[in-house]
Length: 224
Image (tube, rainbow, N blue to C red; front, side, top):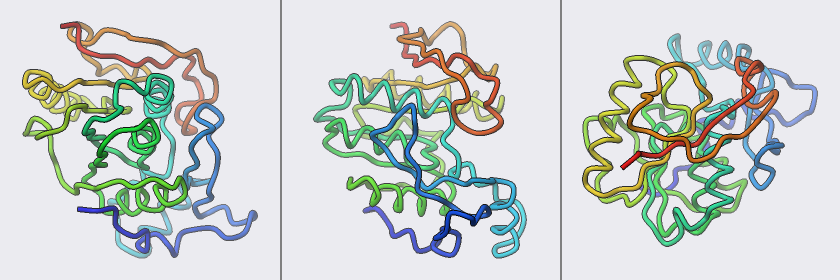
């Protein structure tokens, strides 16, 4: 489906600099070509969301995670990996990596996530960056990425169960000929045999507050 509107998140956008429980449009120092609506305080934002829609909603899309920033940087610096190709950014969150692919000249970019609020964030962020994205709401990990030529996964190995399913998905995509690229800051669940490091970035204070101690983040692809 085409990029939806960001109306779902309109009540949570901060319109004043002193509003610390909402979303502010901000430049990313590591990826200055892109602006995102990010939370100053993700805990306060989560509380506001839960007050409105109920518990259990984690706004991963309100942070620019280190692995996603590294993958976006790589795509922008190596546009040939996506230019003219059909791309899926799986577990897209804020849409950062999808936006980078669109800016790098991808023929078609789909941002995928299971959270409708993430897709609303994708919509707002796509508009802020003057790019057009398609979205896919739902769990794709039992498939192989369909017709996509390139599969991008930024910071998607943060949980052991998710990591196992993501690895199976990426294997199936690669087996049918898709190019697979992963951004990861070393959260401990990334397979160490199939994926090789293509480049690493030395960073400090990159991404969410939880990532404050991260000093290196890598972009990886299959070994064969």
